[in-house]
Image (cartoon, helix red, strand yellow):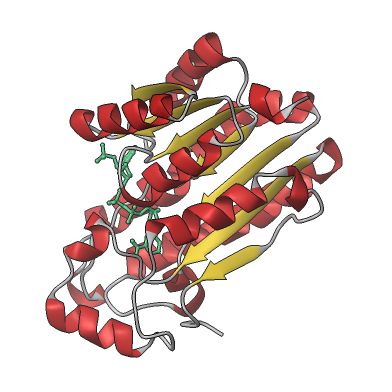
Length: 247
Ligand code: NDP
């Protein structure tokens, strides 16, 4: 199979890190589909940028927390572009609050999107990946999942769970030529972190030895590598991209 015939699916590809990943994968995969939650304008902009790079591109609106909706979305991608060869589970949300005041709903909502959402897409693509003889799954976790973080009981639990999912899928699919890895970003400059109160952000940056936030492209470059043939023998790993925050 030549790289140009591959189909990539990036969840949360309309903005931020997901958009940068989609654009990076467009260099290697001839077809890139993105899933987004509801921001049509951002999704359209990403699709236009992907097409400008010469890729075939499509966007599907879908809540990754909804298993049936995910199955339908993956079927739409398959109809248009053929089976998914590269899956990047990047869609994520935060609902930060100290544990004492966090509602059960906010705890579950973050788990449903960040963790169950990744299981949903992985299962929807699983058979085709297994049969394809070559494949890649990259799950975007977080340093929060490795270190814990005050106010993020929901998010850190989801991201830690995603590492367990990554390693399980890696073991299940290793004999099929499908690698499964996780990337753990630190503080990356996107809309997600732009919402942080300035004091919190300053305190967070004090914990980063490199003293600055990362860029979405820093994550995208690593995902591009893990999805390439050069990373054929890497599976079940968690690659931290965090300016030295967690070591
Ligand atoms: P953004 O908030 O900038 O973008 C989130 C993306 O996810 C959007 O494309 C959004 O779609 C999509 N999305 C959100 N909820 C759903 C849903 N239920 N179903 C489908 N799509 C959904 O996030 P970032 O780019 O900052 O983060 C991307 C990933 O990286 C996340 O998993 C995040 O946890 C992780 N991460 C980010 C860090 C950071 O510092 N920014 C640090 C560590 C990890 P729409 O545009 O339609 O709303």
